[in-house]
Image (cartoon, rainbow, N blue to C red; front, side, top):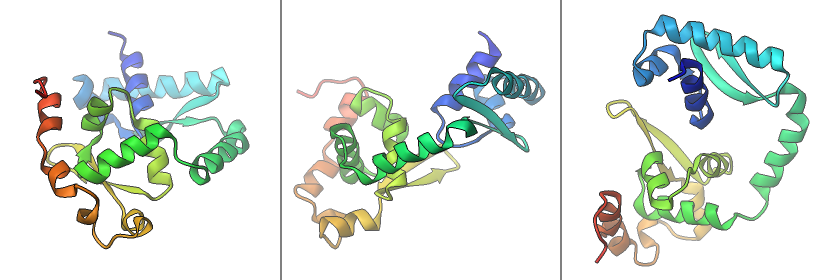
Length: 181
């Protein structure tokens, strides 16, 4: 498989910068190979004058929107962070509220779609927060105190049917490929 393509895909789905070492571990290549391909991608995107770019800071790479589109992106983000939540955003927020802390992978599996943009918007709105688990090399999401306060409850466990839904193993059975019957 094309190394540059793999790097692009990982940077595209990642909500944060990725180090060359991290990319090398995932792709199972030498860090030097990743840096060479990553540096080449940085130059290709810069020369291509596209709406997205790959930037490098130290040994970290990240896919970002083009600086030329900053005003457009800022307007979009303002609309996204101040408008009403979409149905998919509400579904994702509900899953995080009842099942958190939950990994992005499990969110995607439960919803059946990639939730990267939704998670980013919920983070920007301050409704959820991310906590890294270094041992598992995964990020877990939980609702914020602001979200709990916004709901008018003192504790997330005060949500309707919280104990039953938080402990229900139906989701685990679905994630493991089992039946819910």
